[in-house]
Image (cartoon, rainbow, N blue to C red; front, side):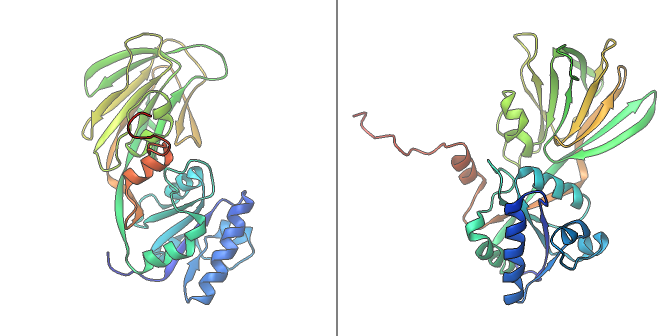
Length: 295
């Protein structure tokens, strides 16, 4: 990739002391190296530094550095939906499948990006629409997943699932996960779903604790339209967007889910660090401690 401008967006978890400390560290480093970090109003007020309006940030940032865990990265992605600002996360959380950068090498990595030593990964988004009585009541996007789950009572829910006009299944389960390939290493993985590299154009549907032996995760194409209809009189159903925002679902609602063909998220991958390197590291797929020969 070619070199890019030195105007860099900076987003961080304002509730995490480590993220605030690193934001100050990067700010001081940037002033010594002629780099201009752009802080939106919320982050700027958290550390009492000059900021810019949200519109200016989205227009002028060549790429964005996110300080925090995957939750912070998902919030940053939502902040940039519809804007071509590539994202690079520095992991101050736990596992880190989205925020993959090492805080110890943050300055070196940012300089490498400025110098063009990176590639871009295109990440598809789910577009969800909630229809109620023939009226669109919610439209939302998710980088990881959309999840239908029950409320606080310990009861199962009944979901009719269609692909286009065809009925796929009637699920009696605790819930249902609809995931992008990016989200395949998140909640869908714990429900028995497959790991899908982000460049594969598909959706994953995984029931949560299904009450039948034969309910299994299903991979659907990038042109499919999934329709989920809660049946019966079940109340207190929630539709969760990337595990962070919730919307009520009522019996008879229709949730239409598809891959969006217009809005994308671009993430930055440093040269020499592939997605498969990340899988080996995070899932401990290496061979350390295993001796050849069986002795």
